[in-house]
Image 1: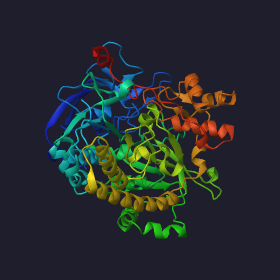
Image 2 (image 1 turned 180 degrees about the horizontal axis):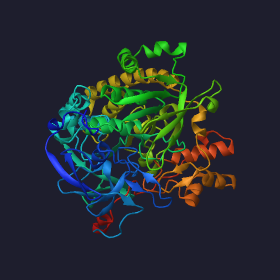
Image 3 (image 1 turned 45 degrees about the vertical axis):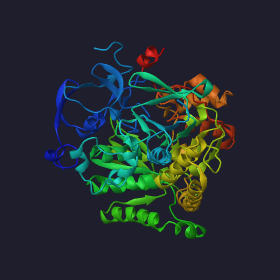
Image 4 (image 1 turned 120 degrees about the vertical axis):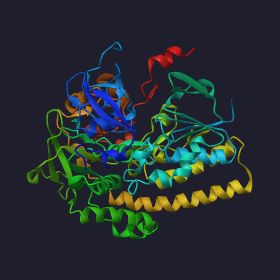
Length: 103
Length: 463
């Protein structure tokens, strides 16, 4: 197993894409979701809850719970588990309900 | 367009329904929230290279290739990434797709909405690193990625055992697997188990995988708490005593970074509920399920329900029910008729009846102790979206708000983005416990459209 939590050797996972997570450049593989990338590198917190300010992350994994929602390319409340990664995508941990205006 | 069949959900049941109806010549509109067909069971990576990673373990999509092809087959219009909106007057159904609202007037509708993880709140269950059994299955099947480095698996039911076995086969470090039930078949159930020897053997095989890797499997054990500030750092686990209560005196603390908590599935009945189908509470099938006739038609004319949303009982049942509902709907719109269709229908009904006899034994083996409802403390979150604690919810129930819709309105429980999928069953159990009545006597909160959040752009663009 590699340094991250991905199965299989890096060379077998297909075309690489580069995205940014909280401003940091991260390499991923085509076909992965944002949630898959976040968990693979140990970035388990997607957001901070609006009322109590608690950490939340990937929970149901099937688009039902919205706990993994975060800011993708300036759009808040995007489910990490349902969003495929693309080259140049900007992913940001969300605070509360997130930015009210697309950046 | 009329006479077409709307199938909601492209998992095993929905795909089987769509394929069967299309094979009989009916026109099918197939919608699903996911971008790929297959639901949770046939979930597979979106790219070819990823699909080849450990394809020895995750071959569901390969085995189901014929079924998955139905989504793009003749007579089927598939709308991936579509969110069902609701049923409206004059038999109009609407869904959001690509920031547009699309309306259809189906001659028959098949709801195959699947199931969601049963929420069993315990202290720390909202911490990052705690996830459902379905969540980890999707991570393994769909992403070929492990959820963490040191993993506790806790829960109730066969899906959780399967998730544990898959983690171990992928090389994950699973520290323990805890099953809340006694996990022994009552003697009277043995003949039923033997009705489906293949499925029985698979279950025994999963236990053998854990044993081979020296992963302790403990029945009558459960998680008591997950600890950490911004992610899981440790868990407290304890045995469940013979009287069904948690034996806190024998609790142990384990260092882990990940918890798989899978306490079974709850049928996704929000669509059938929102359109007024009659439901019945069936604990063995996961909760409230629509009442159906032999054709799997609900109490609402022309609306069929198939698969896990009509009783959580595994993929084999979902496939059979999907096929039966697809056939019955095709007969309804006039696409299927005659002795051939009737012979087909009788064969499906016989096969389903044997399978359900087997499932009774599985339900008995995994019957959960009542203590699973008492893992919560006063400050435990019961509604993850609106961040309502047990103490807040219980205070209102004790002040006399003992009806689900009222409790929902006052506390906002089940009004958040998950629309009650993670708390409605806790809410009704709480009312039942505080009022001293059976949970089957508490009507769950009525879901209202939109059943899932829909972008305002879609609604604004709608004339």
